[in-house]
Length: 178
Image (cartoon, one colour):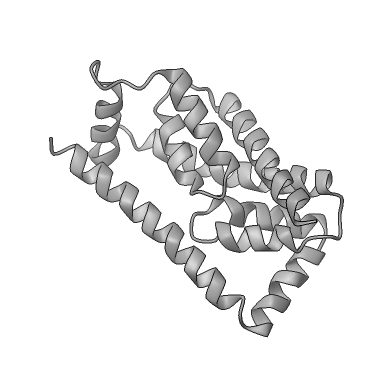
């Protein structure tokens, strides 16, 4: 029973961080200097797309990156999505590796135990689908990276999934905004 409380608090914290980032982005975009920064980053072409991809994967800045992609018109939608997806995958791989390496003790060990308990075990295919949806959306990628780090997914498989899911999500944002 005690294992549930820390994971629930952690998930709520991630949600609050995401919502705080969203609110901060909405407020910050009201200032001309911030609008100009977002516009300039969107106009940097592919290097700006890579940096925006990293921002897209981080929970606190994902809404800012979404605004940057919506204002990005300097490169093709496909090129923007591919390069930004690479930036997101680099960040996601870092989170994936840290969580996977920290699951032998403390909070992550308790959470891993919960995920591997026979009565509560989440099927691998469901974990994969949930991970793909979260990775493709502006939701915190840390949640998906954590969930997928508890599966038997290889690092190469995770990189491929992260890259493809982020490319699809970013491509949709860019296409819809144009």
